[in-house]
Length: 116
Image (cartoon, rainbow, N blue to C red; front, top):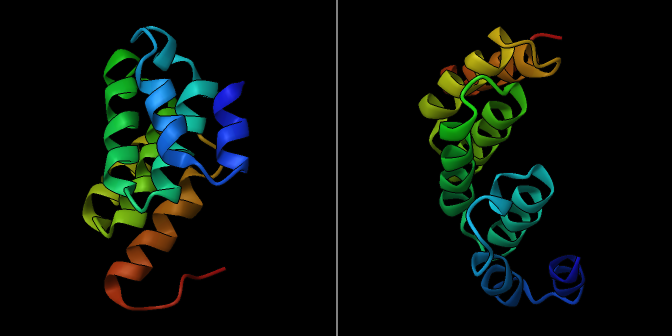
């Protein structure tokens, strides 16, 4: 995928431009989401990445991976409460790393170290 090459060349803006021009149904595919999210992350735009996963989650609300990834991006954006809510959904839907993410986020909100 051309966008991955652009990211490796440290050209995330070009990757975003390339992927943003694709039909919306392609952006529902997790490979495209992952690459576009990564590009937004490299550009210092975690809120844009979270919003991207939020749109995808609207199409597939019961997908544990979409909920989990959106939670991670909200965490990076500093929106811990929003991240906790989505991590709990991911855990409830069976994401294997969901419970650990919930624990880590709650501990972070409470200012304590997560239990192991």
